[in-house]
Length: 154
Image (tube, rainbow, N blue to C red):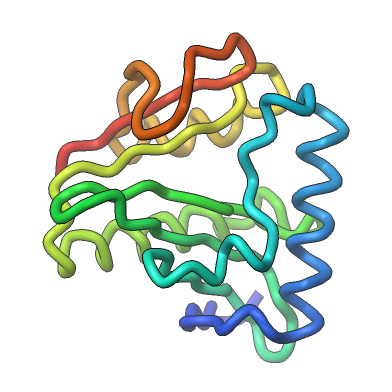
């Protein structure tokens, strides 16, 4: 893999559409319907959401987003690495990019929701390695045995 290129994305390209469809299908396959919190393309186009993609040349490797929850709070959304590129540092690079952007934008607290089952161990491990700690539900989330909530004070 050559140098990764992370760029702001307008969510209009066929590559990101395919990756997000893969993401949503996977989340629906491993989580109960009421526990799927992944956003579709239309909901990701919200003005409070900054969305980035990771590329190697013309190949899309992954994506991630930062949703502003208020003046000093943000939520990580839509972290996804294309299946064939998992375990190659794509998610780590995207998370570092989001953290840097959040800090530069004055975010003081970052939150996230991910799954609590074994399917999400790698995600929870990545977030914990970056300083995220378990917490309770935030924003509009409710207690859910299929959700793990995490927080990072920047």
